Length: 327
Image (cartoon, rainbow, N blue to C red):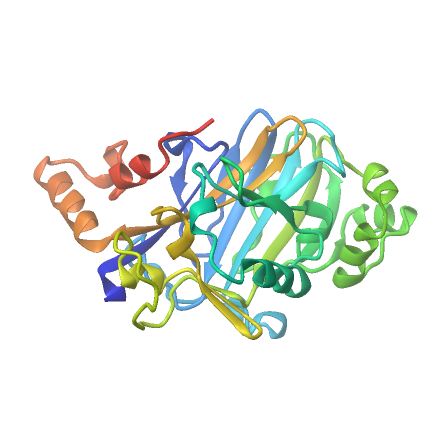
């Protein structure tokens, strides 16, 4: 049954799980990220959310806004790079620690073409690699991009968006003028197509050191809290309830994503410099067995320490064991 699992979202400045903190989903309270490469602030919203932290709202007013009434989730973020990054180099997408080549489903090529048509025409990757990845250039993959002012390394007042903020395409405090000087279209879809129109446009762009950027990535196709239904796949090591989660529901095609991730029960998003391999931030969506979370909480209570006083939050051991080969 799907209610055997709880979804947890964590974020951090690297792939290393110990660098992550639990994201307060749908709370309107952003998660701060600080690293040598950037200062960032991340908000995650999931429709029909059920997971950690306990008591998290099941939805967000974000999904009542007309552009988002059909969306299933959003990863919105503000960030200030600490060094300039060329437009060709910054990518956003998914990657994995272990091969999944033996589990590529029939029809994957067709599904990938649908993804490129429906979500990101610039998406590229290698699912047959030892460490598979699917990345899109940030300038064309991100649904909404707003350019802000120069703020140095960024402080809390610059980084934290207002509660339930819906980011809009454009610029502010000098950012709009910068867009116009570079002839970047003001419309989001037009901007995405414009950057897909030629490598020179990417090369000529710099994610400037010390400049504030705000972005939002969302779509209606990935369902983190899928309906309960029996799996037609015979994958004994994957519980059918897990397969019911993380369902990719494309026009004319549906794929139970986790059944093909080599037994892993997490999905990872990363913003990174593909040329150097440096990570700006990582967001991980993990399905935890509910009974394991309850056991961890009981053990913590019996030890006389609150969860906040321990370095290991509920389910951390499960999480660490899943990401055991990090860079």
